[in-house]
Amino acid sequence: MERYASSYRFGKLTTYEDGTQSNFIFDDYANTRFAWRYPDLAEHVLYTARVVAHAVQNEMAQEARILVIFQRAQERLKEVLEMPDQDTNRVIRSLKENGWQVSGKLKQAYPQLTRQELAQRVVEAARSAVEE
Image (cartoon, rainbow, N blue to C red; front, side, top):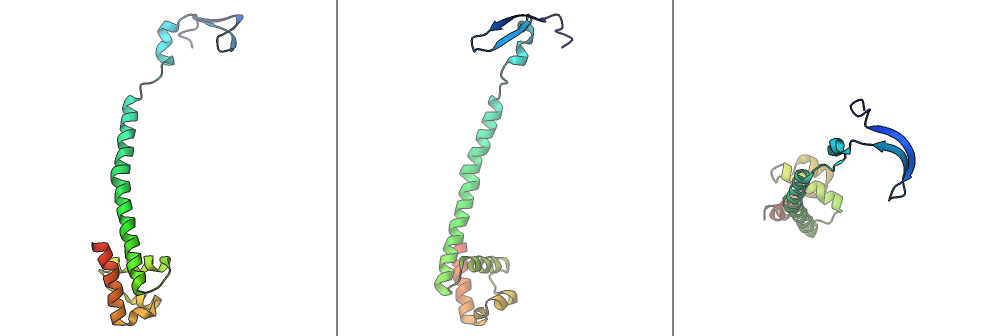
């Protein structure tokens, strides 16, 4: 403000084209125009567009593939052993994390998995969908 102290003053009230009324008069617009210009954000927009495109084309596509695989695993698991989605999610995650082996904890939570034949069918159903 000190730099432009001699460039502004208050005068007669004027109504501008947009209907705004002001008595502020400023004489040095040529030297201060840089402060009123819109910033050039073209590079920012291009960068953001590339980030969004990458997210949509790669990250979201990969997430969609994972969800389809998981849904297929749920469906195959339910063909062998009927259970709610929440339980199928738990079983699939447990099997995958334990190298496609039925853990003791999983057998405790689902006693029907203590039968070797059924447990093997459950493992094959989940594994076949995930590893396709």
